[in-house]
Structures are given as structure tokens and as C-alpha cells.
Length: 123
Image (cartoon, rainbow, N blue to C red):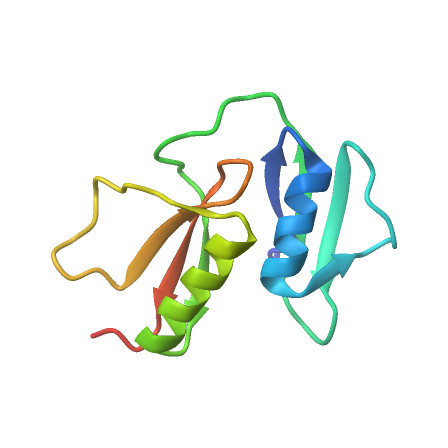
């Protein structure tokens, strides 16, 4: 049976992207260092899905077909996490596809990769 091993994101500046995701998720480089073109980040404590960052020169997609969803326990935590991530260098995305009462906030990492912060308790 197959299983997801790693989520891979492209980045023009792998070191900058790695710094953001390490601070955002509390991850560390799996092999102890960050190369200019590749790194795999893993949770510092316990289980979790690794994130790999590979150098890419392709442009960021405004409406990516694949993205990360990060779950918050409730609306208050979601708001706090969005603020924290923005302070780390993420940007709010003016998303043209929000539903009437969204449970998610779309952000972009410093490399422009889109991701969502989800209120896991939203109706």
C-alpha cells in the first residue's frame, strides 16, 4: 500500500523558504543542513509529514492545483496563527474564490506558494 512520504514545494530561494517553514511549523532539516537547492524538513518532535523544498524557476501558480492545508483547533487559534504566519513573512492572498462563509484563510509563503489555514471547528 502506498502512503504519502513527503510534500515537495518549489522555491527560488530554498534557504529563505526553509527558514519560513521551520519557524511556521517547528520543523528542522532532516539531514542537519540546508543546501542551496534542496532540503527536507521534518517535525522536531514526533510524527508529521516532511516538507521538502527544491529549487524551482517556474512561476508560482495563482490557483495552484495542490497546496497545504494547516489546521487550527478553532477560530481564535486560526486568527492567531494567521497573524503569527504573516509576522514570519507570509502574505494574505486576495482570494477570488472564497465561499460565503469560509472556514479557511489563504496565505502565501515568502516564495509565493499558496497554503490555507483552516478552522477545524467551522460548521
